[in-house]
Image 1 (spheres, rainbow, N blue to C red):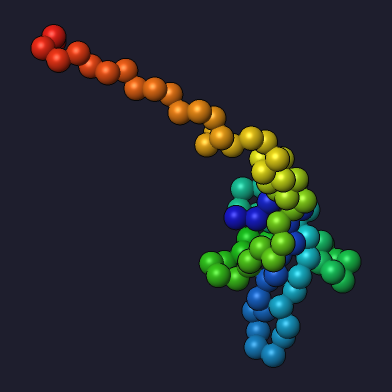
Image 2: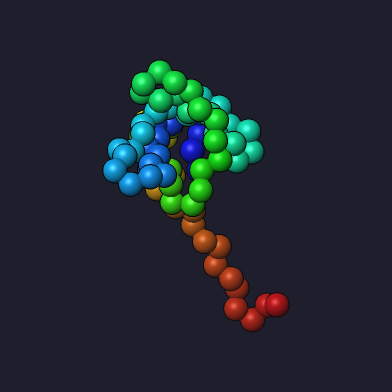
Amino acid sequence: MAEVGDRVEVLPSKGGQLPRTGVVTGLSGSLIAVRWDSGEETRFIPGPGVMRVVQGAQRRATSASRSAASPAKADKKPKKKKQQRKGKK
């Protein structure tokens, strides 16, 4: 599902037309507002397979770079397992 700030492409409803591209400016349930590259803004409910996210919003890229910069859990030393004593329950 698209989020505000995502760049999307919507397939045409009629043959012979080109897909439209724009930026998602608002969401309300399944209603999506898009500002098209032509400058117009439309609110619509996309059908299945009609809209795809071409480029995610910048905030996703910055959060991904933050997580890449933080140390991974794999870098920490593994904890030693406690050995169980045999014969005692």
